[in-house]
Image (cartoon, rainbow, N blue to C red; front, side, top):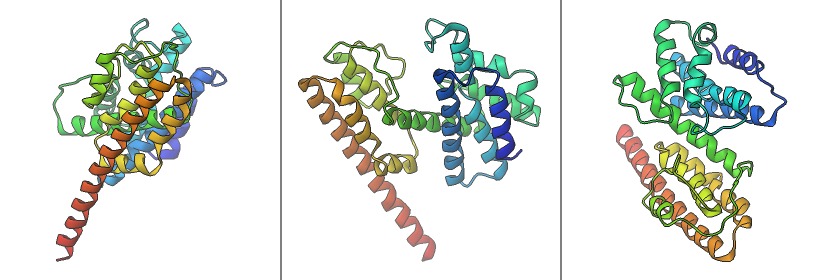
Length: 262
């Protein structure tokens, strides 16, 4: 099933919601951005055309439950509504899933990936683990792009930082789902998605496109002087660590090429 048809089917599914609603529209765009990320990662791993198209479709659909969440509850909070992963699986089961995946095997695998794309999952199988890693990385990367655009909302007004949140951030923990109480907590939560990205090619792109700089520039305006200084320090530390990882990756790649040519 080619990309053009997958995109058309995704559009038709999304049209069952109100695409004039900006909250629905941004989830529609997030699906496209995540799908592009999935395809790029799969391509870098030299996966087959069939595998690239499969994970692209999963990227399109992974957050379709968010649209249902907003339509039904007018909220994106999984804690006060039904989990968006579960809603997504329920929407897709039946006729819609068949429009994206031609075999029962692919349909069942796709539903597992969508159900568990944000939660710890111990399911077995080489394909499941590989595709889940790709989907999670692309999802987090797409969220960082969206954050850097300035469209993420802080929705908190308190100054300062929660010590536990800062400690988790400094230990390079993904803060997704961690309770936050201040503006700085929220910005650190945005940035912490970087720690859920495993592929060096994405880390290199993060640096090249200066997403961390953009996040700092956009959101530091909401902070007092002390919080702004602390955010600057943490952003600088994160950028330095990313640069070191990318440098190691480039050296390994160069050595691999030299060995191949030897």
